[in-house]
Amino acid sequence: MKLERKHALVLLGIAIWNVVTYVTFIRNLAATEDRPTGYYVAHTVLIVVNLAIAALLGTWGVRALKAARNTPGKVNA
Image (cartoon, rainbow, N blue to C red):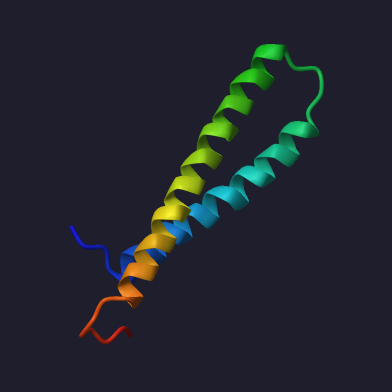
């Protein structure tokens, strides 16, 4: 399957959205007190996994955007 510019933009949008929402989540998590250790461990794992997913989607989005630009004979809008 060939990714087009619109697919690249969707991937980049999702990656940016994940980063923004999870940075907010980190701030909110840091402000909480009196929680069991398991609470912090579970949420930290969620944050790490979702930021890794954002990095992967962002990488795919950038690669797809570069590939769409370098497609010969095609006019990119």
